[in-house]
Image (cartoon, rainbow, N blue to C red; front, side, top):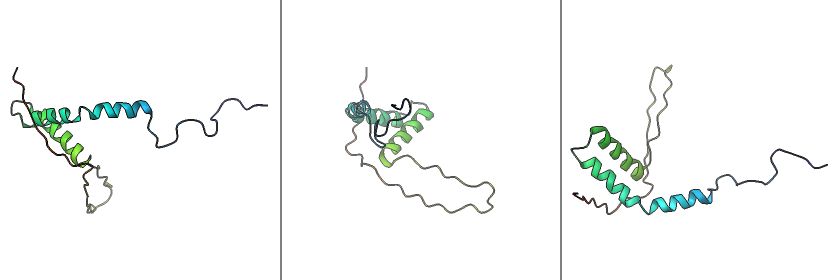
Length: 104
């Protein structure tokens, strides 16, 4: 008698693999990465923008350049706070950033 229902051995996408749709979307997004970074730089450097927008843009640029910061977890029960060393590594260097403005 054949087994019904449940997970079939070997079925489905293997762990760690990315779907084709997600891969295609990432490729399309990379085509606009320079423009998006230029917009973030323009917002960050524009004194007329709200401070929250400028900080958000700066954080976005830093996250892309150096990776997102890892939140530190401290036990509130502990009297002495631990000393923490954080090493940031650059995922990919950002080069040749050009900001252009279109007045109109």
